[in-house]
Every structure is written in C-alpha cells, then in structure tokens.
Length: 586
Image 1 (cartoon, rainbow, N blue to C red):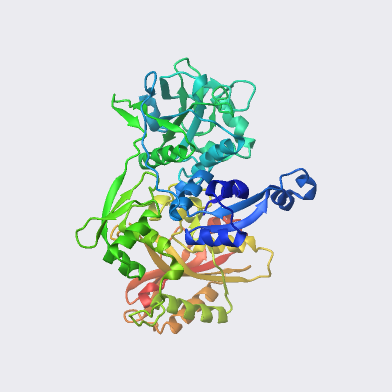
Image 2: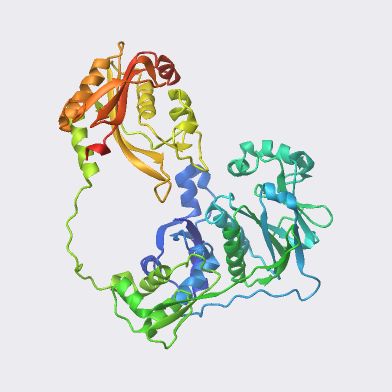
C-alpha cells in the first residue's frame, strides 16, 4: 500500500476542523484508510541518520496515511481532503470537465512513426493559471512520484513529464532517435550531454538508475521537442532543464508517454481531475498520431453502471432501503440514485475512479460507507469441516519418514535462472517446457523451475564446508507448460533427494527409493508394482541412470550425476540423485 505523508496542521485547515490523533485515526478507518504513523521530519531523520543529522530539521507533525493501492485519487493532500469531505457530507462530489483555450490555438503533440519501436503512445494536456505555494508545489511533485511508483509501475508503463509552458512553444513533436543524435541539458545539470552519455552518467544516480533498463537496450530513444528544437524530455528518464517548473510557473504543459494504452488512458483523466483540485484550469490538447488520426485529451469521461439494492444488501449482509444505499455510494464519490425500476440503482463512475470496473467494486464502497463495524454479526448458514488436500497430506507423511531416514529437508525458490534448468543440467531450454517470466528482476529468477534438482545442488554448493555426507531432500511443486489448462501451465508435486560424498553412493539413493515405495505401499513388481530399468539422460553419468516405472508408467529417474553437471554447480565430489512425481500415488 502506498503511503501519503501530509502535514497535520495543513490537513486540518483544509478539512475545516481539528481532530485528536484518535479521532483522525477513527476517521481514516471509517473511510478505508489507515493512519500508519504520527511523526515529524526531525524524528524521521533522527531515526534513519542519527540525532546529529536531525538538528535544524522541522518539528512539524506529519501524518503517514496508508492508502489502498487501487485508490490513485487519494495519493495527494487535495485528493485526500476531497474524499474525506465528500464522505462526511460536507462537500458534494465535484464535476470535472476540460476547457478550450480562451486565446490562441490548441496545443498540439505530434507523434512520429519512429516511436513504435520504443514507447508508441502519448497524450498531453495544459494547466492554466497556477499559483504555486511551497506546499502546493511539493504536493504537485509528490503526486507525480506517487503515480510513477504505483499505476505507472516505476515508469515502465507510463512516464509523466511536466514543463513550464511559457518557456517553450508548440506544436510539440514526440519522436525517437539513436542515442548519439539526442543532445540536451538535462534537469539540474549545467552542460549538454548526448543520450548515451546520460545513460552512463545516471548509472550511479541513486534515483534515476532504476529506470535506465527501460530503454537502454533499445536502438532508438524517445524524445520530445518543441517547435524551436528545444528538448522537453527524454522519457522515461529525465526532463530537460530548459522547461523545468518552479514556484513562479503559471502555465504547465503535461505529456505522458507509455507502452500500455490502457494505463495511459486511465492516467490522463486521473491526473487531470487531481490537478483540478488545485484550482487549476485543465485545458485540452490535440494529439496527432502517425497515421494522421487526431484526438483531443484529456477525455474526462463519466460512465454509468446499474445494479440492485438486493445485490448490495445480500453481499454486504445488511438490509438497507434503496435510497439509503444510493446515499452511501454518493458519499464515496459515486453519484447514485434509484431508477424507479424496482430496487435498481444507477451509479455514475467519475474519471477519478478507474478502480471501479465491476459491480463488486461498487458493493465494496457501499460496505465501507455503511461501516464494517456496523454490520451485524451472523452465524454462517452453511456448516463445513475443513480437510487437508490429499496431495498435501501425502507430502507431510513423506516428509516425516524421509527425515527419519536420515535426510535433511531443504526448501528452495520456485523461480530460477534458465541456465539452472537447462545448460547446467546438460539440456536445451526449449526441451524443458519451462514457464518464462516476462519481466524478470534478476537473472536468478527468469523461469519457473521444472526440476527440484538444481535447487538442491545449489544448496549443497552453499554448504560445501559441512561434514560429509550431505543428504538432502525436497518435496515441492514444479511448473510445467500444459496447453490443456486454461492458464497454459500446471503445478506438479515432485520428490527429489541427493547424496553428496567422496563416493557416489548410488546404493543409498536406491535404498531411499525402496523405502519410499514401501511407505507408499507399492510392491517391487514389473506389472503391478514398481521397477527400474536403464535409461539415457544427459544429466546423469552414462550407464549410471535408471528410469522409475510404477504400474508400467514412468514417474522419475535416479542415478549418478554427470561430472560436468557437478562441476557446473561448483561441486567437486560425486553425487547421486533421485527425482520422481508423487501425484500418481494419490
């Protein structure tokens, strides 16, 4: 959950009254928020950097308020105040609309076809007649950062740029160029850099280095120019210094670039409505697409949904009249009224609430406005007895006996690198049926594991200095592609064990297999029980691998690992392993 920090006195002044800490904590709870911490700038610095660094810091009381991740409209002081005042019936939910320019032409943003290779979408808007105070300016900047970290997914989906309109002139051009062809003076720098130089410069920047990966591998970088060739920004990395906003800024040009059209459509209206709260006039802007199509933004579109009072009463567990439910929803900034057709209610969804996508979202807001503590406790109408899944029950029983057999259980990550399940095991990645992560954070978590063996080998490698022999096992899920499933993949419960010593110890692993089959009540028989037969597998030493069959069906393999596999996991002694599927034994 994102946390919004607001100065207590400024908040209370905007709300029109003062609260005790307990009263405001209760108000937050009623509205679905949480007052996480009451602190001050001085206390925060003292806690993080020591008392010596805190001298001279402000003692002004700060409220740290946890906001639900779906309520982007509450990420600034103005949005928070508006929501609370509407909730307390002190203010009607505002209506939002864009205006046309009173003088001059509509500002235009032209998108070129080159952007398709990197960030193809962009929208724009103009804010007029701003009067910035220090607090309002800080709120303006903090709102952008909160949006970047949440709905914009750390700028990977959407990047927001704000510019002093009086220092630049339209029409503006959004294009993409090779890094060496882009040169400008970035924000808070005193000389010009090429885009390539900027990427090197910001690799050590504690803030901007986290965004470099978004475009650094692209053949072209996105860039926005004004009609005089002045660079406004190189999204999503940095704005130009020429158009930076300040306390004296009166008019702001806003541009948003994105890789995701849905997110940018939601964000453009949300930002415009939040800026309306700052008493700013939101002026329309025209965007021209590469195919010649033109659109006017922001749209600020309202939509309507219909649902019944019976649905809300049944889901929440209350029995309120239709009129009362409509009033509850209106307190949550969802203007509602009965239609007159039975208990049907028409709900108007404002552009500030992109989180409302289903009737259940509306029902949740009705429950919040009614008050969860006001809902009468009732005994459930159905009586059920919880029971363990058979696969989990079998897993627990096996764990106990395998530990009793002298093996130590290990628990490893479900994600691993492609190299772990392919190259290191002597296999090709295309043969593994692995599920790939589309945006892995590190090279260690690229795919979902298809085998438990790499995790156990890495565990042995991390404990090489422990006394020999090392006898480990793990019973966990692997993930395999499966086109017959609705999600395209399935989990499979596996059992894996390894024996690491100065000698291979195949007989130890074979003995563990026999003990496991004894526990599973499967006899050693070729047709009606289990048996093993020689097999070839690149993971195992030639001639030292066997396939396990149960009732004529292959369930796994055991054997002595290939020396190359052992060395790839930075081990130096022989190792025997067993891996098998335990779901057939249910």
